[in-house]
Image (cartoon, rainbow, N blue to C red):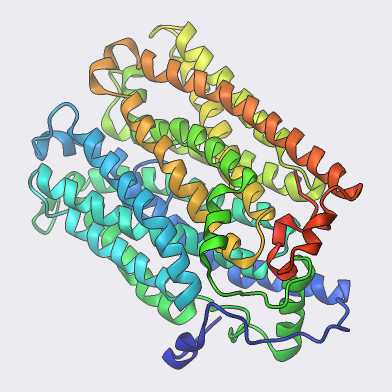
Amino acid sequence: MDHSSLKEKESESSVTTYQVDPTYKIDPVAEAKLRRKLDLLLLPVATLCYTFVFLTILYKIDLTIFDGQNIGNARSAGLVADLGLHTYDFNIGTSLFYLMYLICEIPFALLIKRVGFWLVPLSIVLFGIVTLCTAFIHDRGGFYATRIVLGMAEAITMPGLSYLLTRYYRRHELTSRVGCFMLVAAGCAGGFGGLLAAGLLSVDHIGSRKSWENIFLVEGIITTGFGLLLFFIFPTDPEHTRLFNEEERQLAMARLYVDQPAIKDTKEEISGSLVKRGLLDVTTIACCWLYIVDNCSVQGLGIFLPSILKTNYPDASTIRIQLLVVPIYVTAGAVALLVTIACIRFRVHWPFSLSGGLLTIIGYSIWISTDASSAKARYAACFLNMTGGFINGPVVLGWAAANASPDTLRAMVGAVVTGIGGIGSIAGVWAYVATDAGSGYHKGNSFNLAMAASLCVTAIGLFLYQKRENVHRAKGGRDYRLEKGDVEMLGNLHPSFKFIH
């Protein structure tokens, strides 16, 4: 791992200084060995980061460590009553989290490109401290404040991890790695978070803390400790990392060059025109909508899953509800991980995104067409809904990242897709309101059914656009771009750049 000094971290720049011999040829055997090394050393660190983030944000699947997961668990354990939250206060606090996430993510992504990846460990420490402080809040003002700070911290973690993977992996390798750090993390956070919450809720007191406060206290301590450890082991840029010897570094940098047509450097200066392209790229815009739709389901279902299950099993204890959550997350994570592996094996995204949308449609249709007497069918529907959502999260993010170039767009794509995708998280939170609990959250389920249908249409549309564009470029229809100069900045606009749809 990286035991990087402060001097090394300061040497990271938004511009590449390492040059690869233009006659260098990539050895497939050496490349496979390097890829295995990355999978064994870099990927587990990214996965652990996301596990901690996921547990902290909102009892769901999206991001940094014990708070998210905790909010859902703590909500069913009495947090709302103890803090004196009114009918919509929980929804407002959660919306504030995603609003700050949306506002801060793109600026932080560009800041990470400029100053380096050490900001990611810093965000994990911040997550831990705020989670720990949540155990000591007493009113809704404290609840709102912790949500806001957590949103800012999350705005560093997700784009940082996404950008890190684009600096180490080639385009066609990204989706399964994004899937690994998102899905293994989400499955572990969902499963472990539920078990840990059940265990902590069975403990009367930890010092002066009790009930839901125990969850935030313990998870905050664990997260803070892990964040401090990350300062010593979190990877820097491949240009500087101690993870590689010189031969491996040359190969790693060559992999970045071969994946992006005509570039002179793997990290160019940030410019206004590139930032504009990062925001207005067709693939990125389409993936933003796909991520918004997916978040409507995943975030809403994830945050309110314990409450939804309570309507399904009204006589179940709080601890039993927590335990019922565990297999849903584990199953969804395992299935979705296999799907992301299939994405890189077949080098396609759209059929798997479409399949996730169809699973979601089936799941919500079951909830809408049944009543409280069909508890088993509704519980099975939760598996379908969560699995469909888990599939589209990494597939959509991988789809966008695999087609982003040059480096500024790569740095931005994770932030733009997940940041704007936060709109879906806000909508998902308001799709499930306490006043609709008596109907089994019929309005929220109907809303997500309609959104899932739009996901299927968008996935097919993006596939058709990229396929048509690839054919057009193969016929020379975009060669005129080579005559305009700044060819090294074309990236995914270059005529030889082929979309991975």
